[in-house]
Length: 444
Image (cartoon, rainbow, N blue to C red; front, side, top):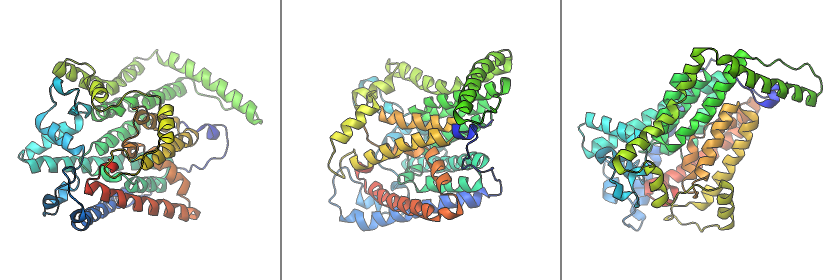
């Protein structure tokens, strides 16, 4: 079952096309993505050798000797900022309860460092082994994310849209984090796989991937919303299908459709409740919050605080639950000067926040509701944390934005649109990759 946008359901002409399966995932997805990774390595090497030596060195900047020594620089260029927390967590585990009031590692979720721990010990457990393990996991996870994203978009919008979507993801200005020692690529792989299997009505696999996403980042628990919506739509359409309206007038057709939709969504679950398999599928959705719950139980055992990650966010990192509208208002009315050593890249964060709020509205109109709900929660959760820091990185995982851009630019006559997106994205990505390699806190 494919839940279409409202204007398509009511018979209005849309821009969707029948899915085409004539594309090669190697040619259309993996190759473009890997080419962008090669480009980032080149940018990183140039930054290390030609810009880093010119900087006045402070304790916060990367070591010149280490970052210009071959082959160490090939993995050290991807190891900045929070990477140190992930690697320390993989080596030594979570810190004691006494650190919850300091910049502790309790705000970092366990799936990514646990995988680093396992892989690093296969490589011998040295410091280099942990770095290589982090890089390996990030890049393999990114390829898995590309695979599921291509397959998901191809199935619904066609191979050309899928290929463009992957390219726009790979060229997103902060997409270098997919290859860095960060959890972004692992979370994205779990999240896209979760929605891929939900769209295919494979609820146990979908929920398992969602639970893993909740073990990778706190946003993962909110995958429950789009998956639960999809489950509701599927069983409603299966047991109480909506009859198409025969009215000619738009408003009469809209009223008839809304009435039929509400009837279907109430009656369908009631009829579905008679079958045991539907209850089992519903229980599967509990795996998504179970990922977060498992981490909270571990935190309680380790520190005595059931909400240890959230307590540490509040007490030390300064992140509290806040109205996103209020945060945007305060941020817009109190602009900050550009400062490469300031953790809040104000201009970039404000632009990205407004851009992705626009994508949210666009997704609600253009895309199936499951994708729109995913966009909504993934955009609003970082905006509810009382700070705008790192928004450009957090929004890297909002992949429906890339679907929208692909749909907007996929036609033959839209070559200028594609060229604009590619050139602008590539320029910004190269610039921000230089900032990242140089260790300038603003980019994080």
